[in-house]
Image (spheres, helix red, strand yellow):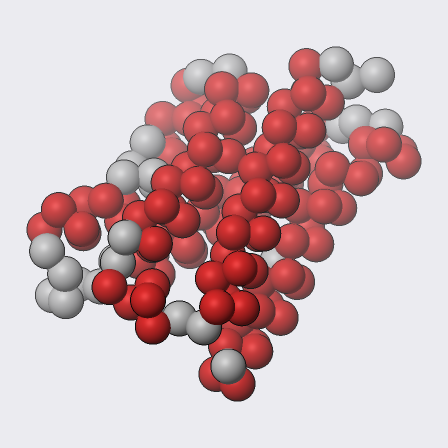
Length: 139
């Protein structure tokens, strides 16, 4: 458990920007800077999470492809409506968790870490849903 304490603390701290971006428009009104920050932060965290799954030379070709599938379309997200991009990003966090759970390493992770990953993914997904709603109905 001790080796996962930092991972768990950092994981929950990583939620703060997501939660802050959801709370900001409720307190101060929506603006494009908040929406852009949320989107870019989401992309950065998603790339980090997917990158952690990619173990070059230590996995099969299909597992390596699965690890990067959620982030391959990211450059193209700028060509679609923001709400669709946020929907892709939110769903991609679930894809990363599903792919992570399918790895042999998942069974070696502490139960608290596994629980934290599910909670973080759920909260991040809900933040994406709320942000989509606030972008569609800004007032």
